[in-house]
Figure (tube, rainbow, N blue to C red):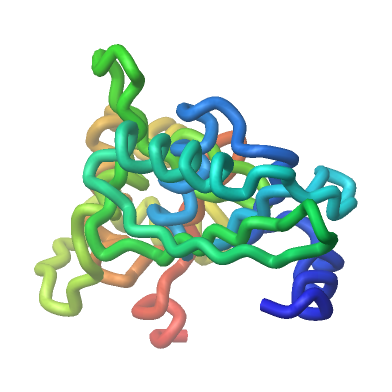
Length: 218
């Protein structure tokens, strides 16, 4: 990446696929960002860039890269392959570009240094947030055109709601249909796998909207 390309990328600001770091943070924070990108759409981490977009660079790029790879190698399960490159911005300072591809081995979990907690993260706008139970379930499966769908009472309630409203959450569906949150979650995940619904991770509560199959029936 050239310096002009770097300037253009930084000017876009942090977002779904771009994160700025002044330096490599604590191993757990660094691994969390990488996991979130791998579990979502992939992305890039620019190390040596301030939150406001100032490109201050790092003095010891080799040390920063080592800290980055140690965090990723030690704290992510399954491992995530990343690529790194350096963009020199002055005689003594460089920006590190860490590229994280979207993974086909989702979900990736952050494993704490003590090994007693495993947490999956996803990217929502410019933040890495804990993945919901529904998000984790959907990561483990692929959309399937051949899933058998039975339209019973609760499915009718759901489809009628989405015909009149833009979105629905697990909590809302459970209350609307008078079913448990577990049953509501299973139904929403099942219909998402069949492409009747679309799942949206969110900062507050994940939500679901009409998917390709429903939209094609309009």
